[in-house]
Length: 85
Image (cartoon, rainbow, N blue to C red; front, side, top):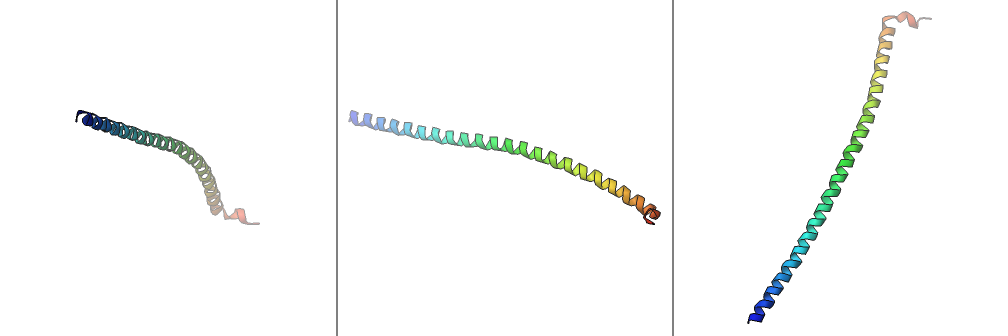
């Protein structure tokens, strides 16, 4: 009977070790995927900020052009003689 108990304990230890390795592997996969997700989000943020900055510059240029056109239209409206020939 003593040997049977020893074998049972060895089997239980073996099962526990196998389960431990499976858990470590699962945790390793989770950690790797979290790291990849974090790296993606950091890259996405950098790319998004760059694109938004570029878009902001283009909008600034368009706003300045619009202001210039508004001044030209208001000047032309105030002086209709500019259109007379």
